[in-house]
Length: 367
Image 1 (tube, rainbow, N blue to C red):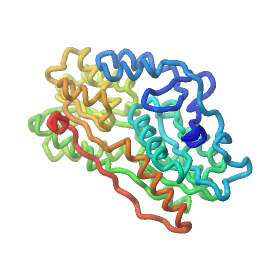
Image 2: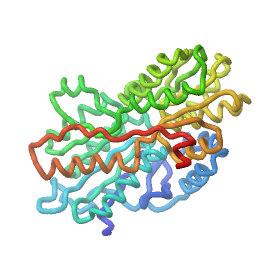
Image 3: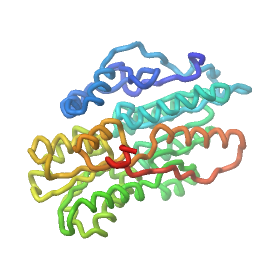
Image 4: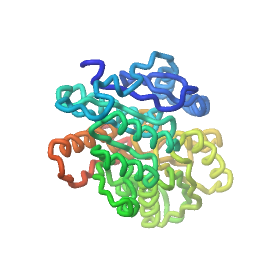
């Protein structure tokens, strides 16, 4: 594989530390803030302790500008392999680093077909940086952008400008808002799972371990994100059907340390809580730490969504009940393949692709 085949972009401003993820062959910058808080939570999860230790290794940044990938400064590379930019959320989140690793593996297996540029932001809320990354990719002359937007509405205007510049855009993971897309007069294909159905599977399984009338709490993702809203609705549907009461539902914005703080408050204010439903696994880990600190590990259940490695460990150890696997290692691959199909057939708009999402429990992990 040539060095130019896969290129990484910095994920934040210069004051953020350069680190490397152990499962990827590239470096990224992440904000030091939050790492220390997450480190406190992750000490009880050996898999994540190893991940964090590797993250803190300071290594040279392997790529620094998209010009290294061989495109001319004034636009796309005629007669050359298409250049695909993968723009994700936080690469410090294991789910998205797994997604990046899957995309890298796919590019290596199809190196003659396209070049790949991998981008990420420092945390789930850094919308302005994700907008800037899209603008940088357009200016560099990429042929396609495959994006997991941090917000379902805020990214649409810049993606409209990308399409206007002739760039193919494919939406993965978090669906863009249909109403805003219509207002902007554009259509962007979505490739991803049915988040509501996935969350309902998790909620239905949790309900089998609870009694009618029991109280639970929900840790939501970013409320302006479609996938966060869908997961909340899936949880609510499952709890309503089972006659279980959601006594509090708050957003921890996908972040582990925020979830830890909010879950601690929930447990204090609502001691009757029997379970916490977290809209992603990072927040589930934060909830587990709060439950342990409150001395309630034996009577409060936790479920999540994403099936990251630390959660598999937690399920096996009895610290967590269930999660949902949306196969992060393949999600970006599905998006890249869709983008390549569009590039190969200009003017066509493929149908949306619904990707699998499966329930993960102790039983399924044992298979």
